[in-house]
Image 1 (cartoon, rainbow, N blue to C red):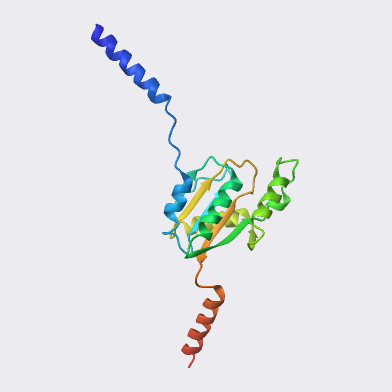
Image 2: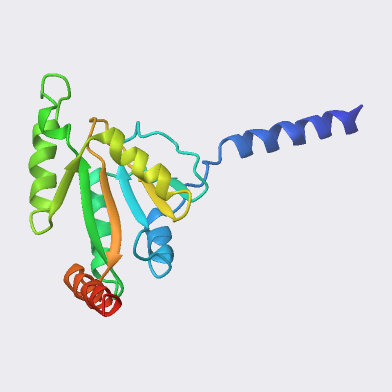
Length: 185
């Protein structure tokens, strides 16, 4: 009987100790640093609010950062800026300028903060559903890293499509023009 009582006590103590251990949260900064050398043009990094949907396309990896949205955007932009091979093309929801403060407390301050942070970048605004559909399609062929933040204001996600840093859009246009000219001879 004592053996059974000891075994029961041991299992109860072990389960209480295990239940008290917090689940490990992936270190999102380490994951971004690890992924950065592998990501290239046509890959995406998304910094999204807490209600952003968990997508099922095979190339989409979602990480819960439990971090401040602006902090995550800043950190990701620094990581991209420190790379030698990619640059950010930034997209945001076209709905954001129309979200009223009365429906989403803090949205005005967020618009100011994100505007200040992204002031030196060209930001393209597209409807949220179009961006999500584009991400879903990209995730079927390319890697997409989704970083969920603790943001609770709608339409605040920052969508970053990576492009080649050492080959500009103008260089690509000149190359295509030469190819077209050579083919028409």
